[in-house]
Image (cartoon, rainbow over all chains, first blue to last red; front, side):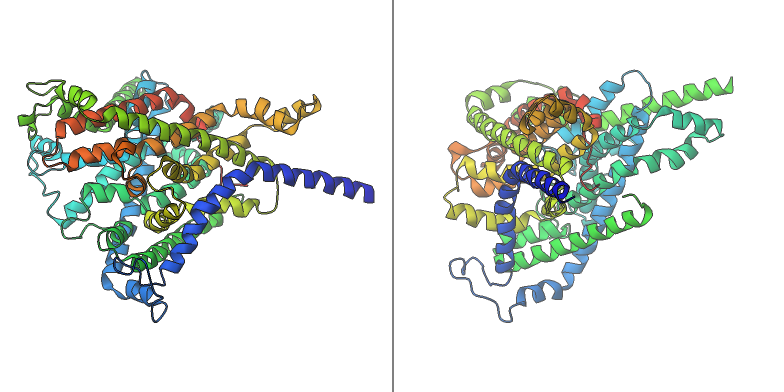
Amino acid sequence: MAAITAGASKTMRREYKLALLFVAPAMIIMLAVVLYPFLYNIYLSLTNMGLYTFRNPAIQDPIWKNYQDVLGQREMYSVLLKTVVWTGVNVFFHVAIGLFLAVLLNQPIKGRTLFRVLLILPWAMPQYISALTWRGMFNYEWGAVNHLLGFIGIEAIPWSTQPFWAFVAPLITNIWLGFPFMMIIALGGLQSIPKAVYESASVDGAGPIKSFFSITLPMLKPVLAPAIMLGTVWTFNNLNVIWLVSHGGEPSDKTHILVSYVYKAAFQYYRYGYAAAFSMVLFLILFGLVWMQSRAGKATEANW
Amino acid sequence: MTNKKGRIVRLGLTYLILIVASVIAIFPILQVFNISLRPADQFASTSLGLIPEGASFKAYYTILFEKDFLRWLINSLIVSLTTTLIGVTLASTAGYAFSRFRFPGRKAGMQMFLVSQMFPATMLLLPMFIMMRKLGLIDSFIGVIIAYVVTALPFCVWTMKGYYDTIPPDLEEAARIDGCGDIGVFTKVTLPLASPALAITGLFSFMTGWSEFMVARVIISSKDLFTLPLGLENLTGTFSTEWANYAAGSFLVCVPVVVLFVVLSKFLVGGLTLGGVKG
């Protein structure tokens, strides 16, 4: 009996060693380049570091002053609301469009490979190039979007001067950018659903819409759930698109989401300590959001 | 009869939607191509045709032979390929450990990868800049490569782990019985089977290096070390933005990644199994 346990613990120790060997290189670099900045950021968030105090930052008095400043300003809450809308609308359309196109592409039709390749292009294009291109396309006078709207008799939209439309422009851009990822994920999931499941459902008299909601969606859930979680995180923190399409928050800083707001505070106003505290708040909000999302996932699916 | 008619209508509708969606998907890249062919006086044209009036390839000539484009290209290739090599190596090994072994800290490690994705760019940029400066890695390729590897790694580890999960361990057992060592099992059996996931991981790492802008801007300042995004940005920043040159450069930057995507797109479907949170 003792010999068996000794043997078992020996193989276990060997397994730990092997696991450590495999996982250590990635872990070390992550800890060094992510954990250190994280801790340093916490320290920064308690100091008054700025352009003039770059070399000799002092701890704030009271120590949580930066956090007080961040949470005490009203603008922060309107930007937070915008960020939640930005994330929600984006992820909703990414999943809806991606899933819809995936279902269409999953049929045995001619040219599906070609369509799949074409529909992937928004993902393939470097983000800063597509963002700047869309910015040009949203130009009031000579941009392609207003031009095309003119064709169908819609008046030119002031994409860059009116706060509402100036926010919709990056939103459209980012929806365009993000649907191919969800489409590919969904397509992979759809191909793993056995055809027989649908056949037996149609024998039972289920139409295409009913079988989509009662078979396809539930079976895609394990594939889609992590993708949605990642999508939420990426969208929430997407600095590139909002920054480049709205040209740094124009008009008059009305189009910011939290991350671009902080970026401006840090790299244009040089309020490093304040920006560090804001970044922490931002991280905690996102962390809470994802935690709630994964809890909701757990509640509805036992084997998650 | 009505059934057949219904099917034709549905097929027609499917094609219509796919065609419209594809046009929207490729429109911006056509737009870039269009601008790159425009002569200087036609920049503010509203023409929507693929080929503008007075089209010329002059911008391509300018960018290739009169600007530092080739220098940026070589720099970007060095950075992206090194990032890919390191990223794939680290992700394929770490993903293997997370998928095959149960060890203390496994769950925490996997969660750390997820949580690291939640850090806003602003939280890492400044500390990273200060850290790199202390280590003397400012204005060097090593600095950006490290930053890119870390950016790409979490997604890559997840992808690899998810894919390994779908490979039955029986095959590895069989090889072990045949006298294969642990490392041999990994390199000779598991790794070849995971090639679709390796392709995706490689593609993703490469793209991170090829397209990244914000970090490069913070770390690199000498013109000799500019990567493509920095170089292109530099073109828009000059006294009068050279839009045609900028567009020509952008188009040339897009071509390699688009080709890579097209070649690897069959791996993307099915190879992208984000099984990270499960089990």
